Length: 128
Image 1 (tube, one colour):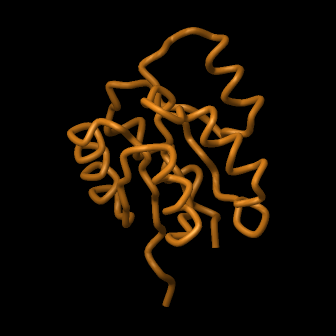
Image 2 (cartoon, rainbow, N blue to C red):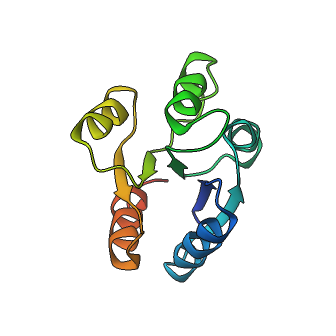
């Protein structure tokens, strides 16, 4: 029996995190929500998610800094799930920066359930 794939949501807006969490669960995955980059780093190490949804714009440590810290501190050495950046930004430079620092893809907010579900299935389909 295989375990349900786990998604870590790092989103500073609690209402947005709840909405995205509902979409993730509706798509058939388990999720855990945290509300800051610092919490995301701690939860990543203990939750061992199969995929991370990481907001770019957060107070304190933003999503870019969080992802860079995960990679720099070796948090992802043993476990490197795909990371999808969540963003309300629509500038090409932000999408390029996200890819350069290691994100697998991005999702523009407001999050569309069909787009999120398609990307979750795409990135989790072959993950063991």
